[in-house]
Image (cartoon, rainbow, N blue to C red; front, side, top):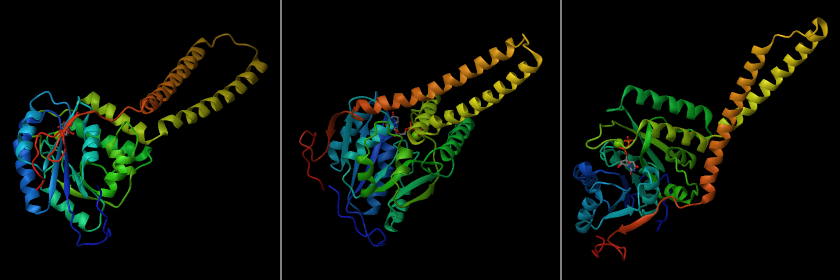
Length: 334
Ligand code: UDP
Ligand code: MG
């Protein structure tokens, strides 16, 4: 499986095998252009490679098109998942299957230019164990999408335990040691950006220009993006849980002073009947705070529930590879 790691600061090392992991959901329109550009780059490197495509429950003919290719290209492995599990799980499936001592994760919509791999590999040869690609420019995204992304990184950086480089996505080159570490993480809810940051290792970035999607539509809707951001926050920060303690302490303290003051006022001036508004306001305010706190608790509890069930991250319908006994082809690896 894993190949013996050479000293990480060696500048002469070359990977014995490069794995390229590509999650795919309804990418028929992009396939030809994607493979054309990717193979040009990989052939140019002159190193042995494998491409692992994960069909994440596509409803178009992505799978058929992939299998067509796979029949004549033994270096292509196709993992067909039993339904749509989401990009993060599809990526995990690909990382599990990968054999290379260098693994590249890349989108199939050509928003991640395959040409960047050359530069990333150079960084790996310099001794870095993870090279993430940083978007120079977010093309084809609305103003609000960009602002939301910016806000997300600001919140994440100030609240969570890990520091995530801004504008670095899932386009990465990983050393075998990093892949093994990620594969060992048991959590069900895979927030990959956070996981990549959490595992550590020597990391660096290279800049690329993000292109607009070539064909098809992005699988991300606004509601999904918000859920994604919230997942990231709750997976890597307990701040939302603890902030309610501060709120509670502050409100209890203030209430205590208020009670003492009222007590003295009543002792001196006698009972004064009006006070309906303030009572109602306090009840409403505290009720709101309590509900909020409960909601936050509930969302963490929901995560715990998900983890405790211990279901697998994804289910594979079938793996089509040159080597596998249930694969479609019996062609020997090159
Ligand atoms: N993708 C996937 N499963 C999903 C959503 C997306 O495998 O549920 C793949 C998709 O085919 C593409 C990559 O993940 O290769 C990025 O998806 P997309 O372009 O929709 O995301 P964006 O570029 O907007 O982040
Ligand atoms: Mg995309």
